[in-house]
Amino acid sequence: MSIASPAPLSRSVLDCRSLGKRVAVADGPLDLLADISFSLPEGESLAIVGASGSGKSTLLALLAGLDLPSSGSVMLAGTDLASLDEDGRARLRGRLAGFVFQSFQLLPELTALENVMLPLELASRKGARDIAAGWLERVGLGKRLEHTPRTLSGGEQQRVALARAFCTGPRILFADEPTGSLDTHTGEKIADLLFELNRETGATLVLVTHDEALAARCSASLRIAAGRVVEQRGFAA
Image (cartoon, rainbow, N blue to C red; front, side, top):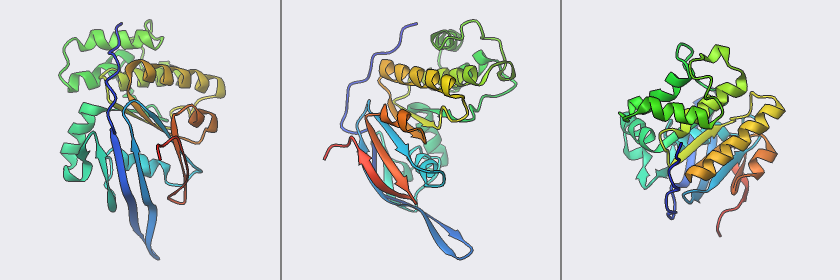
């Protein structure tokens, strides 16, 4: 299977300025995130790290346009996410982004092949079946095309999820604890595959993880504590 050549680098594919998220709770407003700013060049990889409850997944949701901030802005490929309605943000994600989750989020009634075909069919891509089969071959599941998720191991399910995420040629991939539900050995294999596919495709990677070794493989990192950036690495001054 041929993999598309990496896209040429641009100044920034993801630009986040003074980002904040505030929610109302019984005893008053609570800041889940506050004053987060960074720019991520195309083709780079960013790890968002921190303890449970620090705001990592909240930040990822804002960066992907799955939620809107209370303050500040997120520019994805030059588009201010707050300028779009929910349908517009969904269309932008469908065109630009891929997702990998800790819980795999495969449709249980579909085969591995059908799960990977789904985003291609939603995008009206011709040859969806052949493209999906090629990606499953690429992730080592060429002989498991007709298996449903319940007949696959956790590692195999995450390989299907990786094939589904990369098959549309996303400019940016959002990964939320992609090895979090796997044993150490399987998690290392999946991490190796994730970074290998990322290098081959030239996609920008935004990775939420509690795994310090996994974070160290990214070109940049943000450490979040109580909703604020307490340490950053790899960003230009």
